[in-house]
Length: 544
Image 1 (cartoon, rainbow, N blue to C red):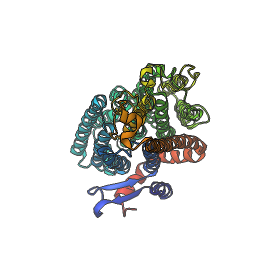
Image 2 (image 1 turned 120 degrees about the horizontal axis):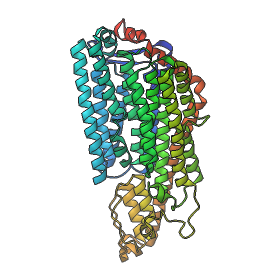
Image 3 (image 1 turned 135 degrees about the vertical axis):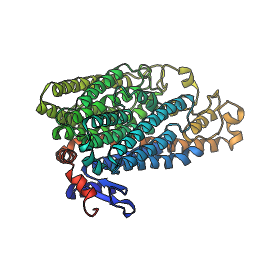
């Protein structure tokens, strides 16, 4: 509600400024909320809350042991870093925000990690550290050239720099934030690291982190290095990112890697509007950012449920698995169609704004951007249709309705096998406990207890004490425990499904509210092009 209040006030009154410690800018630290930052903060906080509820439903946030104690503070620290990146008014604190996000995201991506996830987390962290080092270098170079790191002050001083240093600094900014936003050819780290994390962690990373990096690029490029006409380096990056990301998605058999490549490809749509460098293009970028934050969260949450039901993220194995529910099919379809830009969903509204801006701008570069955007949209629809068909468009296997997949029917034959494989899949491959023989009655319940709560109840070896329940208080007590566990599991699945449904509904609401969002995006784009109100609010007079 506070973020929404900031948005309402910023839209009505102009940029709102908080001087930390009472020190005025440019010497002191300032936080600035204008239309763009307040809008993105509002949407990001909503998504962060939804993903946390999904994690609680999945059991990720309620496991016993150190993981549960670490998850909540790390998650809150991540959200704090996101908020600081949106609101900071100087380059150095923008660096601090990215470091905060990097530290907390490394903790989240490696919670209860095995060898594969630890390796992916290390790739993610090393790439983040390298880009942060480059960002700190850029901050130092900017300070050396201008004597300030305050964004409002820099907007005035960079205009007086010679063309050579100004061009170099602008390209360095594009490279640094291009790494963090996964622009091609700087995207290599994302498809290798995001898919290995648990579903809610992947969802919040996909929804927020790349958008925060792109917001920083958008803010710095428009405020410090404004362009007249099409921004050629940004246009090249947009075309390459759209094509490489979407074509890379077509080659994937893992649904999480497929969505990760599509995440990369659709950063190119945001670059499309930035490359045009006019109000219509920037307004389309703002709309696309709002749409993309919501839809990426909805897609990855729905994909987490699909993988949990199928028991595998591999598309070719899903064809032999038990068919998920019709509700889940609808959730995935709505999110997928929105990302592809199918009318009348939010992706269609955002893409029409971008294509209209390209048509109005005219020229070979703008028409090329528009043509590539149309092609990328069609390829996105094909890639997601392939994933949907593999996950949902099939008949139930006649020989074993309960089997989670054809790739490992031996594990499914064990009493604890199906539940264990689904729980493992929900965490994108994290271990849920040793696979026991499962001959006794205690095997399935104990394996589920290990997967859902991290407890060490046993490994279902099929001994008399496990099978008959004599060692655990008798069969009646064991049945009561199993019933309580099953009821808790059903509540968790309902919470997960409800959260994914809420995100899909929010994507629909974004399209339904296009009449309100589009004018707001136009006003936010105008603020980006006309830096006077921003600099006056920060540097001139009393902070509001």
